Length: 133
Image: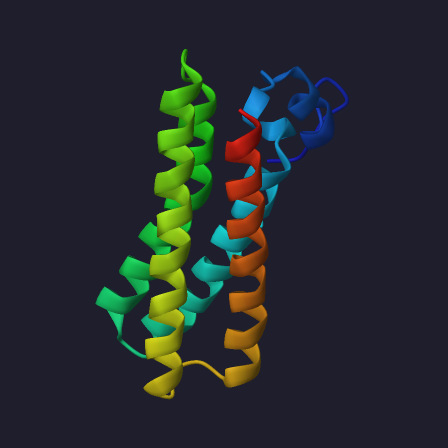
């Protein structure tokens, strides 16, 4: 279907959708970036017919940003801290999978190192953010 002058562009339609407060959190934005990267790794695992590994990596990756988002909607800061803790634990799960996948020769060491570094940074930022609540 061709776009007409009366149809909104993608950019203008984005400006009309609701803004969620978690979108302002640096930790959520970093978690979203990591989730995308884990999804890309999972796509490569799928091509090798390692569907279970791929699905587990996707699930743990999505848990990062989803738990931050869900926690940001909490009425009580202690509840938000619990969601942040779940998100941080998912980072440890992701890190463990990366190390196993590296040992199995499924992911190159350079990519694992880069992803583990990003996981470590996000883990520290989540812990620091939790302390400020």
